[in-house]
Image (cartoon, rainbow, N blue to C red):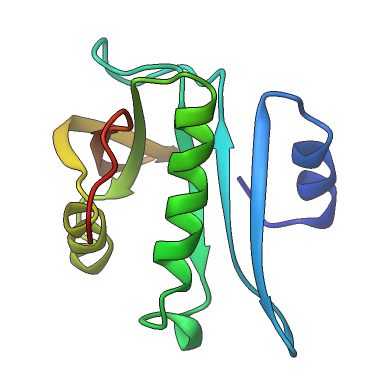
Length: 134
């Protein structure tokens, strides 16, 4: 999703999406979006996707990402989901480490396309029926 005001308005109005925002005195410092009707990239994936988890670089390592992720996982549990998936750039070792730390497992790969360019992404999932201690 491109970060535009119109795309956020559209997402807020979409009943298949849920968004949580983290903010501080200066404004928004992160957000997470869950889609309950996503088209999975792999056969083993549910329709529940963490579509976006973003925390501003200066705010990372302060617990915001973990708090936003927990909101998303609780929402998926409340929906009765068994698992939720996400994609992450295969070269983003910091993000991959974050998700592994929080109980996600790599289950495959997919390609993220921008124009005629393809970028490898890891597909990761987690069983939301069992909360993970971190």
